[in-house]
Image (cartoon, rainbow, N blue to C red):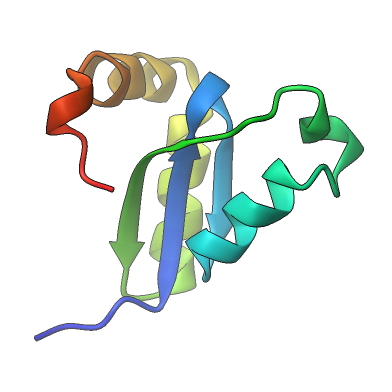
Length: 87
């Protein structure tokens, strides 16, 4: 079994976060600790993707912030029915 050391998480409203602890990051955003994200609360996790190293996670995050990456996320993550999302 492989372990997950780095995570690239996608939150509601198109917010993309790179973190090693998804639950803490989500609580931080919902608590309003960041002025940039406080006005969009409450945040919900749409998907989190585990990577074995930081380099791969950062590369995927950079891709998702590109035009084709945003289209990929919209098509594969945001268009899913709520019941099919894994939390």
